Amino acid sequence: DGGITQSPKYLFRKEGQNVTLSCEQNLNHDAMYWYRQDPGQGLRLIYYSQIVNDFQKGDIAEGYSVSREKKESFPLTVTSAQKNPTAFYLCASRNRDSGALYFGAGTRLSVL
Amino acid sequence: GIQVEQSPPDLILQEGANSTLRCNFSDSVNNLQWFHQNPWGQLINLFYIPSGTKQNGRLSATTVATERYSLLYISSSQTTDSGVYFCAVPTDSWGKLQFGAGTQVVVTP
Image 1 (tube, chains in turn blue, purple):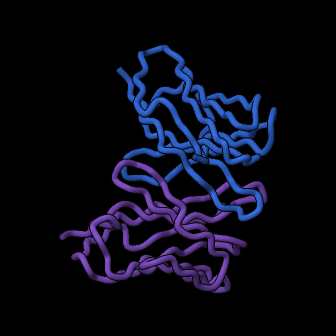
Image 2: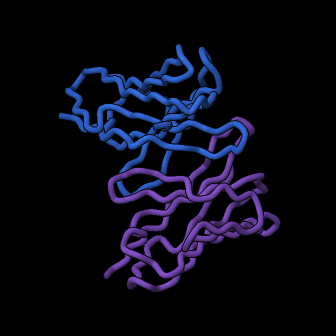
């Protein structure tokens, strides 16, 4: 099936630990995005990538890092510098022709 | 930056009722998207609608770009329509989107 796969569904982080969230897509989309959603709120952009080996900071990039070594993959690392990481993280990719955005099922990150 | 406002923030419907959700945006845009987030968090793209009207089953959307608003209509609502509805508009040519705060919809049997 074509789509966006995020893993894991649930993740727990200890103090001072870096954790990496996986996002893989087989839609052949060039552009990929990471959003953060806090309870009862909308989505805020963390990082985005328009093409392999290139990515840009979004509105709330501090404490996060990404890489884009392959078209299909856009992992997000939540570093120890992110002091309030508990949130729902959503990965998306964009169809260049239609402009429509498609989302993965999300990863819920909590702090132990 | 561009502001996106959605109303109402919350909506409770009896199954079978119709409703209208509104999305206002502060600047000219060349497209607008509506999404539905189900209770498990999955976001589904409902409409990509720069202007005019589109229909998909019991849902339809209308965007009046010149007046900077879009409407999402839910007809004959079902409990599976529950969730949060977001609209989003682009903030640049690279596909960055600004999301509204969402409308929480609860459809009761």
